[in-house]
Length: 462
Image (cartoon, rainbow, N blue to C red):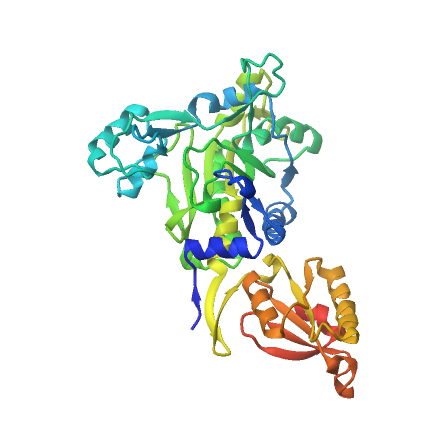
């Protein structure tokens, strides 16, 4: 019987071994909280983003795409509150100087804490439970007071004085680029409310303690959609967005029992509602995507900061107002990791144990692998190449593999989630005339093989 869901160690090992994810700067000892996506990881990541763009933008008439710059005017981060309020609670070990997030240390011993708490409140909770807390590095129990640590990554872009007196920032989230382009999209596209702006892009955070592989890093990619609505329609549209996002994630093939909604108990002052879609990672349920009702705070703040009116004019009702915003915001890396965990499967086939990724075919980094039965027979290799080229023209992410025996090739493709393998053999060449120009098509999940005409291949695996 197949068992799904691997340990964190097995997931990370597979990701490295098969070229999904590498530690960044590995030959120099790595760089904490940063990862590189390898040949298969790039394809898998692209498929995830393409699916999000399809369900978020292409299948809707009311959502527009955007790609805003990573660097923006520093005043944007002041207006949004990031320069003062975008922080995590930091505590430092007095013995070894290791820095940790106080809320996560408390969480690890079962104490509920929140990064939104002020310093006084989280210091009080930390002090109450100090006897149970140990430094994750040295095990000692000597800590500084908890203090807020700003997560924005500073840069000296445009600062020629070298004194960092007016720092620019790598963006801490992608949505601010959407808010400050609200008027541009409104003026150039002339949408009617409600409408949305979607963006996929890099974000950067000076995380205190990056951990759990791709889940919490210092450089990552976000998929965000900000939807602008009439104030009186905010909560109705919010519930529709919640349903849409859950259905879209289920459509990726993630098992329903590994997903759940979690309501935010503590809301920022301007928010009306906030829920997270949590996935059951190897360490337990944790946030994968957020869906939030943000009111008019964002546009109002940027209108004040810039001195530009960020309003919508309804010509039918002859009224002008600041739209409210609902958003969906998810990390590519978190979804990437969730899909790997969810697809990781161990079973037994032909009396041998195997590991395979039970990915939805459209998400698999390799859609089809083509094999010649033997690599030392030119006529087989030539025909297999011909079949491979035809498939690659259709799907792009096809692979030609002639290394090792057929069984080993099947196992390699299973482990990277390839849904179908095609084998060209002597029957394909006409050794049995009735089987000429047919190939063996193998299914990843069942191992079932069937004989199929080359002319029918594309429609069969499409």
